[in-house]
Each structure stands twice: as structure tokens, then as C-alpha cells.
Amino acid sequence: MVDSWVNSAEILGSDLHLELTRAGSRRTALMAALREAIRDGRLAPDTRLPPYRSLAADLGIARNTVADAYAELVAEGWLTARQGSGTRVASRPAPPSPGRRAARRERGGRPPLPTGGRRGPRPAPRPVHSLLQGQPDAASFPRAAWLASARRALTAAPNEAFGPGDPRGRPELRRALADYLARARGVRTDPERIVVCSGFAHALRLLGETRLTRPRMAVESYGLAFHRSLLRSAGIRTVPLPLDADGALTDGLADLDGVRAALLTPAHQFPTGGPLHPGRRAAAVAWARESGGLVLEDDYDGELRYDRRPVGAVQGLDPDRVVYLGSVSKSLSPALRLGWMVLPDHLVDRLLAVKGEREGWTGVLDQLTLADFIESGGYDRHVRRMRQHYRRRRDQLVAALAEHAPHIRVSGIAAGLHAVLELPPGTERSALRAAAWQGLALDGLGGYRHPEATTPRLDGLVVGYATPPEHSFAEALDALCRALPPETDGRPTP
Ligand SMILES: Cc1ncc(COP(=O)(O)O)c(C=O)c1O
Image: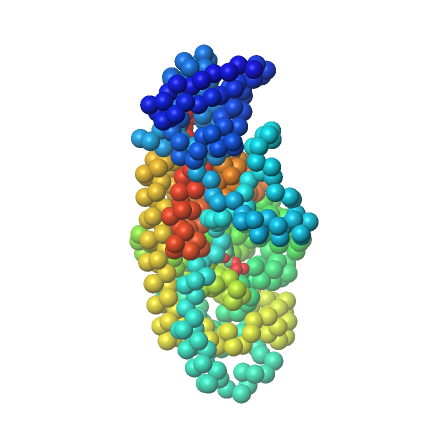
């Protein structure tokens, strides 16, 4: 064991006793000693560490060794590196309260950990913040306006509305949707070609069962694993389409054997975030026309666009070859389980044959309420209000990154409820570990990648900014910035 007093008192404010074991590399030994000092509380949160040069001189080791150890500990979340404020001990989220620990023990969970004498880093604390993508802000659900619509809709509903129901869904809702989608999203349809369903996932299941989408379906190289597995359970093999900053490379569709349908997110590629290039939209439609195939257009958050006018639906290019799919899951709430398909004429009966003779999925009261909500202007007002709210959130995220992590590029911010932070190659896993250690729940891009994708692997974080409560959003952003890897040369700023 080599004992060393670090005498950089002008930086640390006090001397630091570090014990470096003789065994192993100097970098590993220094990292272990720093972790131990942080765990013991000898290095309190926010303490500024000495510059590489002084610590290296104090310990008699190379400057690069210190730099590497700091960089690794930043990636693990023990330290933070910010321009202008040096490398500091990360502040930890509050540990679970004794009451919660006791409850966890009673449930048979892991007992509380001893505070000292352990080897290796502590397991990550339970998340106290979440920047997981996927949901709109539940606190902003327009309860009063929805209630007013529900009351009006129920009062006006004809008696036959309480019968078994048309499998296409309530005519009031299909009429309201036809007008709204034409006006807001450039969709060409009439109410007869709209089928109401329980959200996008239900639509995908039904389309899978029509057999028009078999045996293989092209999907984007990055997308929701849940949707791919849903198709797999329907017996459909998904084939990944390469992706770049302009979206999916749809001109390659003709080369894919046995592919009869292509599932795309043209307005806002999920999750990488860009719109599909106009030339690629046209190429997708041309392929569908020539091959007799179908484009399935997932318009999951088309209304939530911030910096310019919404990108119109591809369906407007050819309503006979594009199935347009939408839902209220991002605009209102995923709990409503309400969505719609706008089908080519020739598909309506086939789809209804699969759906069943009666509406067995979506409650009539919610359908009538949504119809009133749209027709009374409540839906437009809500979407406009949420656009402002989410744009503010998005701007806060971008500002926090510009201040604390200017070396991290953020993309996909023109629309939707999430952004993508592009990370240096090979750093996604350590950034996720660091986030977990900061008590932050977060997704990496890796989880969205199709297992057979050939497109270059992207390291990145998918940051959902819609759900954290207002009072803790800034803290969640702080935790995020602390979890990010340092400058791309791999060295934190001393
Ligand atoms: C890519 C994508 N498509 C569609 C949806 C909507 O799914 P659903 O309507 O089944 O909730 C979501 C989530 O809201 C999504 O992330």
C-alpha cells in the first residue's frame, strides 16, 4: 500500500489522504482509492478535485493516468466534468428513506447496504427522476374540457349508440376525424375509410392479421422493439431498412425479397427524430404502386412540431397505397387507448373481417367524447397549449446541454416529446450506468436498434422531456448532464 497526502489544499480546501494499492495498474488503483474516498464521505459531493498535473505530482504517477481515471469515474457517474468548473465529486440523489428501506426488507428485498468496507461501486440507487421517452405529461390531461365534452356527448347521444356498435367505430368520431386529419395533417379520406381502434398497437395487430403485410415487413433500423415483437407474434418477419439523417432509405425497398409492406414514421422518425426526406417519401409510394405493396404510416406525434409547420402525411400522396395510422397516445393520453386507421378503399372490408362484426374494443363514450372534443375546438386548443409547454421543456433541455455539456450534440428536437443526445462511440453503456448512479431512469439508442440492422451503430441517449413534474425538471436535467461523458478526447476538464 502506498500512502500519499495530496497537498492541493488551495483546490480541495483540505488535504486528501489517498491510499493506492501496489497491485494492479496505477489507473485502477487511483480509481479505487477515489471511489473509496467518495463512499467514505472524505470527498463530499461537489468537492473540486485537483488538476491532473498536481495530483499526478503528489502521487508520483503519470498525468495521463490521472486523466484516464477521472474520465472513467465521470463515465461511471462518481465525478462530473464541466467546462469552467473542473472535475468535481458528483452530488448523489437522496438515498431511500429508512421507512422505504424497511418496507423493502419486509418484502424480501435487498437489505440496506453497509456504508463502508465494501469493494466495488454501490449498486445504482432507485431512480428518483425519469427522462424515459414514451408518454405525454399526464398532469396536463385536459380534465375539465374532456369532462365538458363527455357531458355534451352523452347528453346528445342517440339511443342506438348504446347498442353493439359498428366495427368501424362511431360515425360522429369518424366524421370529426376525417375533417380534422384533412385540415391538420393533409390526409385525404372520407369517414367510410376510417376505422377506429384501440391505439396504434391494435391497428398493427389487425393489419398483421389481414395477411396483406406477410410474410415480411420492412421496418426502420431503429424503432420500438415492442412493435417488432408484436409483428413477430403475428408471424411476420421484420426486415430492417437502413437509416440516415434523412430517414429510411426507401429506394432500397424494391431489393427486399418477400416484403409487401413498409412501416415508416415519416413525420418524425422514431426515435432518431428527423422527418423523411421528400424524395424518400416519393420513393416509398412509388415502390408501393409498382409492387402492389402498402406503406404503413405511423403518425404518432405529427401534431407536435415546434419550429416550423407540421410535415404533412405521406398518405396525401396516394390514399390507395398508404395506410395512415394515428392515436391520441402522445397528444392526450396513452391510457385512453384510442386510435384510428385511414385505409385504402380496397382494404376496408378485409380489415373489418379481421376486426369482427361488432365494435369489441373501444368504448362508445370515449369515442363520442373525442368526437365532441375535436369538433368543439378543444383538441386544437389542447394541442396548441401542449406544443408551447413541450417547446419550453425542449428549450430548457437544449440550454442545459449548451451550458454544461456543449460537446454533446442534440438532435431530433424539432418535434415530439423526446430528443436524442449523440454520444462518442462506445460511451452509451457507461453513460447509462452513470445515469442510473445519478438516480436517473433513461434509455439508450441501442435498445431501439433492430437486431439485424446493418446501418452504422449509433451511440446515444433518448431523452423524454414531457413527464417530469415542473418542480423537478431542472434537477432531472442536472442529473442528466452529470451522467454525460466528458469531451470527446476522453479527458474531463481539470
Ligand atoms: C413509434 C410510436 N408509434 C406509435 C405510438 C402510439 O402507440 P399506441 O397508440 O399503441 O399507444 C407510440 C407511442 O405512443 C410510438 O412511440
